[in-house]
Length: 355
Image 1: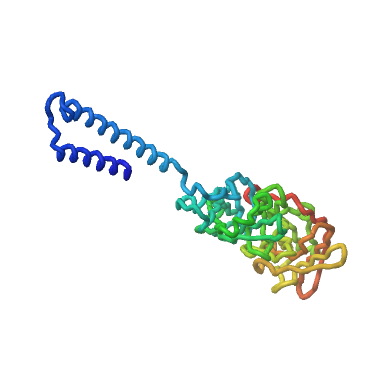
Image 2: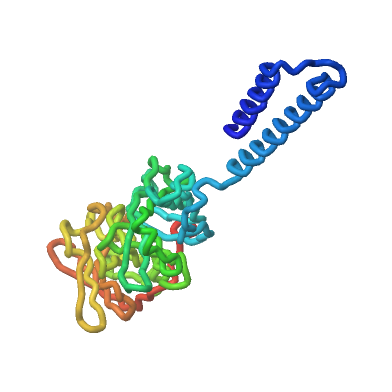
């Protein structure tokens, strides 16, 4: 618009000079009406041309994309489609979206970076309400230097009713300095706390899916311990897990969780022993072993009745192999025990919500 305003001033000044010079407006004269009309037409035409140029300039500026000088982000949206189990909640990660924060702010330089948002759902297969609340992180490797990097976040929800599911979206910020090393081909989404058997989902073409989905131990399910013909303890459920309730196991360890039914045909009430390590012992083929973490309850069972309780036994992370499980029981101050053998397998896992 500055150019238009300048030309208007020049045209008006020229008209003022003509008046000041005493030029008449006689017909056919040099300053006659015919020539004045011509000059007016030329002036209007010039102004129209200028306005058209300015409109074109303005349109060109408006058409420029925000942050047009920014380098392209090294992270792009993608589908994920993976399910992991963490502390009793099943997370299905559906997609990853990316927002360029600097482009949205119409910047030409990187100041904020990008927001990576994962859309997910959380299923609670437990018998009580639980919140989906876990640490999450993006990890990647800079292929040039070989160094690893991480950006952390948090997934959280209101309590999810037993047997229900709920949407859970969570974001992870990538700062400008992190974008400089980010490599999506090596990136992994980590679900869970560092050092506590976290799950991982590869986002590129490298890395291994570690879903931490409980693994049924079918070779143990249905096996029974006979205690002097008066008590029978039967394994109803057996899973290899990486959590005890809402607590994850430490790296390098897992838990064999068993639900056991106590059927009492003795003439008195029978209960599990109190404390840890007094009911079940697990021994591997190499002789190493561990004991139970205590029972879920005392399980006191009247004569002629039965009850089911559960417990967990810690095992090493490379747990697959042959084992002997022994149950100890006391009846009328006499100690009894019985053992069963089984093979523990390392997969496949089965979601609790699908059983």
